[in-house]
Each structure stands twice: as structure tokens, then as C-alpha cells.
Length: 360
Image: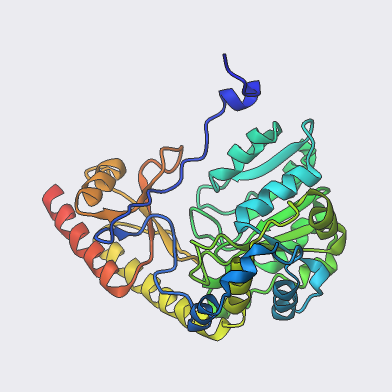
């Protein structure tokens, strides 16, 4: 006999990228930053007094919220700390979406969204991107016609790396009648010449929530710390009604605060990733593996039929190199490759060159 709710029993759970326990694997499958966190984060960790762990952590992560608010030039009341960006997704759905409502996302998109919608027992509408991965011209109209209560847009987009301007997002928020969550997990890797700064949008629109995470740009995927930025009317109910009382622990708060105080260090790693992204793109193109222009720390790579995406994924894995294969429409002939260190990227390219040569 099963005690699960029927829709939970019927659903498929989220499948994360492989997390090998050995250091011998070149791991280019889950979009982690290839460089370590800042020395200030290391110092903050070393200064944790074990005796303080007998007490509950600051319930609202006040110090972190103040530092984040200063960084984004908003008020602390516009910031909500979360246990990774994924918790913010859950909070937004729990707070603003009922079982009779509709959540809308693009297709393809982050594969956790459908899982969370199923957990919420809420209908999910997937709106196809154009052939070049751009947004449909009538995207906002489609959202309103569906009657969507929540729309989630990833910017830069995963898994394609595409980029939307703040002007586009502002126009979308103005037309859309529901809550617009902009998932900015990869925002730190956007080229500076794009002049992307979405924080001012929360003062212009009362229906925007920005999702940020320290997993990618700040090299803290293992910490599980994220935060939301939004108007107080959206942040407050999550902060004081639907959020767990102590959702972020003391150590995580201290390290996350130190990370945001180390923006200059983190920015150096972003520059390295951007440079490596450009080099890796050129090298893959030279091998006949076309990549879509990316503003993230990964590349979506087209795999020719004579190689086959799944076969190439398995061949790389056999050589202790992990990339990401998605068994989904429009993605089955592609691989997503995280940008690694220079040596990791070089090993990948050398292995791919040998595999391509064998297939010719």
C-alpha cells in the first residue's frame, strides 16, 4: 500500500547531473565554477566558533540581506535569503500559485521546473522557443491567454545560453498579468558590454522577482545558498509566512556574506570563464561541433549524426570526462558542456578531436 498522494506517486523526480566522488574525473556536466571561492570565504569559515552552533541562526539573515541590498542598490526588505535558488522557486510557487492556477515556462528550460509544478499539483504550460532559441514574439500574449499566474524565464537561458535584455524583460513584465520570476542563476557570466542590470526593474514593476544563487558565480555550489530580489509586496509574504523559520544556517550565512563582500575576486573568475568560453567555442567549431552563442558558463553543442550525442556522451564518460546529455525533444542531438579550467578544456578538446577523427 502506498501512502503517497496520488500525483506524487505518479510523477517522475528531478534527475541531477552525476556527482562522482573521485577527483580523477573532469567534471563539465553541472555548470559549477571551475575556480575556488574567495580567500575571504575561507577566512570566514575558519573563524566559525563551534560553540555558536548550539544556538539557532539569525532567522532573517540580517547581515547577509544588508550586504546583498547594498550590492544591488535596493533595501534589505527587497531581499530574501534561501537554501539555494531552488528553495526560492518552491517559495514562489507555494506563495503565489494555487492548485487551480497555471505556471508557464519556456521549452526547453530548467528541468526542475516541471518537477516542482507537479509537487505543487499545479498545471504547467510549456511555450516553445523559436528555432534559433529566441522568445516567441507573442510570448506575453500567450501567457495572458493561458491565464498563467506565474511565468519563469531563465536569463541567461538554460540550457542554450541565450540572453534577454532588461528592456525586453521590462516590456514583458509590463504586459504580463501574473508574477514574473527571472531566474538569473548564470547572470554573472554575461559579457560586461551587455550592460545588464535587472535590479532597477523591481522598482518599476510590482510583479518581478529575481532569482540569484551563489552556486555559479561565487563558486559555492556546495553551500546551497541563494536569494531573491523583488518588491516588498512579493518578498514579505515569502519571508514572513511561507519560508521555513530558519531556512539558512549560521555557517552558510557567514560564508554567503563573505562571498558578496568579495565581488572583485569573483569577477576575476567570471573574466576567466568568459575568456575560456570564447576559446572553447572556437575550438569546438573547428572540430565541426557548432555551439549556440552563450552568455553563461556552459555551451550547448550540436553533435553530428555520425557521432551521435548519446554515443559521444558515453565515449567521453569512458574517458573520465562528464558532460550533460538530455533525453528531451530538441536536445537529443546536443550536449551541454560546462566551461572548465584551461587544462580541463584542453583535455576535453583533445579527447573530442580523437573521437571525431575515429568517426570520420
